[in-house]
Image (cartoon, rainbow over all chains, first blue to last red; front, side, top):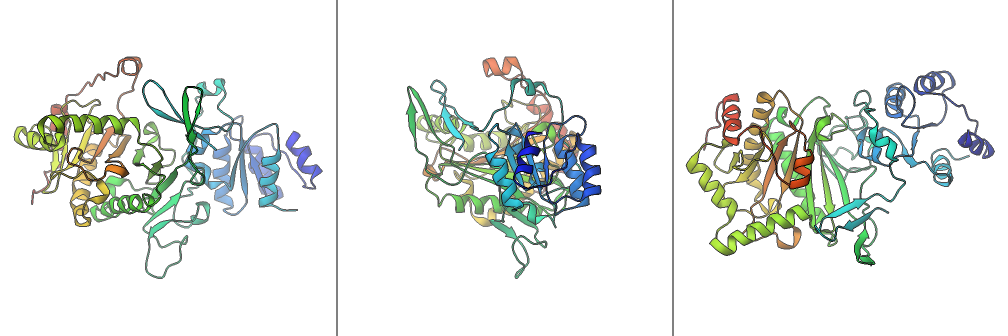
Length: 103
Length: 337
């Protein structure tokens, strides 16, 4: 919710998804310009979700945003456009979003 | 910026990621990361990798486009950073420096479902020559003291993606394991004025009970004191201290024995997870009489547990002589030309 509010304050329209399956459904319905995915999620994890979305669209920008740095060792994360470590300070995420999808 | 920190007692260097670390609770997670679906290393997905630093591709074809038969790219999310100075410093009694290094991925072929052992020998030669070329190139950067090349095959061996690939990490320090091996080899040389590995090659050829594969240039053996079941080393038959200084024509011969050895392991152990690692002299003592480069191949069949961690002893349930017999039976021997 914090991310949603911050991004909305910057002028982005944000759609939230509650898990991987929901994210895939909403991706198909809304065709967003950018996806931000956590890795550890209930059910399907963020990398599995990204792989399914990537099979549908190679070009949709995806940011993996996770509390854990060690997933960087997983080469599956290369399918993303950026890997951001979650922090109370949202500066890195917001900078990355703005780099990929400038307003 | 990650940091390199030195253990004062063992002399071991450790890479500490200074980003937010893993929470204690998540170490218990059994969640597995998927290795299926989209593959960022497959041909056609070049835009998902950083720009290539080396590739085998047809003359005139553009970098980072399909058509390649092998690519080398920097790691997209590297453990060490290429930019910056080492800034060696102390923190009280402790030593540390910035985590400077190069981390590259060698994408061994465009096809997802191959393995090193299923590739033609001529293609294995290309991979081995690529290791050589990358080492030569990276040693032009004087910050790098050691280059580690390794391959993880299978999830149990640490591979996160099935697409055939190996990795290279250029380090600003010589790792402890290499320092210890060099010291042991130097000590043997100072005593006997012979390279210990050359003596091993000679002894193994005389005894003939631990030779897994050989040709005129190379020998694959199950080492006398194997730590792990079906551990195999591949060594040049003639003295050679530096992998990358080995003449280019030698690599076809290496590829033949290396590929044959991996095929034997694949057949005997039903496509096991394994790691292989290059052991070679550091950049500042490439040419010497006492060290002998080699590859170590470790099938991941057993787990390292408390006794091994606590004592440094290994319990190997398969003798190297038995392992050799099984591996010899898997395929006809290569002809020793």
